[in-house]
Length: 436
Image 1 (tube, one colour):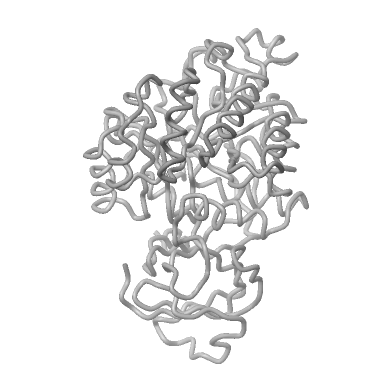
Image 2: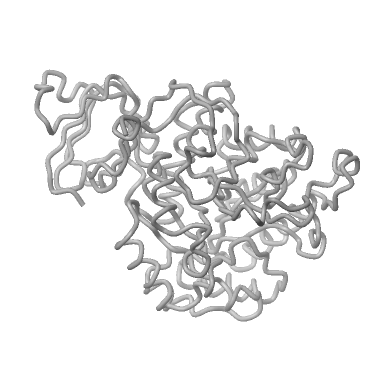
């Protein structure tokens, strides 16, 4: 945390939490926001070295990514907490929520503590772990959620694995409800999706690839909604990808159930046709859906039914992606493309700026009970200075992750983070990086 006094002037302040969108300034003292207001510091001396002239660019809360897979511990060749944090700050992300799908699995308090200590020693961003909901991610025996929470776990999930045993999940939700804990679920029926590689439909048939229907997702979403009705637990669907799931969650919210959901950036920007000639970087979990489903996801963000946008950052080594499509590993890197994809919804007129940024800042903060994600007096000075109009082409060789498996290679976007601050400290400066 920075102990300096830093002034941001001539900024477009955008804070979805308060509805602020105005030209103004922001003061940081001792790592926290000391003041923020329109027209603040309009006449300040810009030669002061502690003054950052934003030149009219957008100053927003640092992004919060609720779904990040890393390889540490166990598969550091794919990604470490340090390398993931480098990718995060380049994307304007100040907080990453890491999944427990590591080796060993994060299912013990000592391992939660390891992640937090390791992150404090090596990472540039705030790293908060979700702990496993079941031991070894096996879906059979609940973990010690109370002890894991005390150790620092912000929620409980089996990551990219669905708990097939409904009785186990009901018990976990009932326990979580008693203590106000958040459960995060992955929605894919494991039997219907076993061995599948893409979305079921005409295109999959033409490619000759094993496929699973979108209904495999919706069935689990609907099952879990019923369990939330039984238990009253707070429940978050990590990512949805089809219209039927969106409609089910919308109906559940209308009934007042404590359910939230997310969508991965690639499900907002890509559809099943982008698999093209067996391009394995497009192999993600759940798979890319139809164009109608993609449009539904965009509509869900615009309407607010979808609460958060995540990167679902899942780095894979080259040898696991350079395989026949059916055998290739699932997953795509996404920390650095999360913001540009979200801004593309705004540029296309599909969503207003406040709603897109809300899904990246205040909404995940509210779901997880964090004090970040807002431009408010007393809040941690986690900030992203964004040039919403700067054009660029996604170049895998320029990504900061250890892995290069981006599905957005060669795509053109507008909008990048030019500076990122965590606790008032500048952890990324694109202009300085470009000079080197």
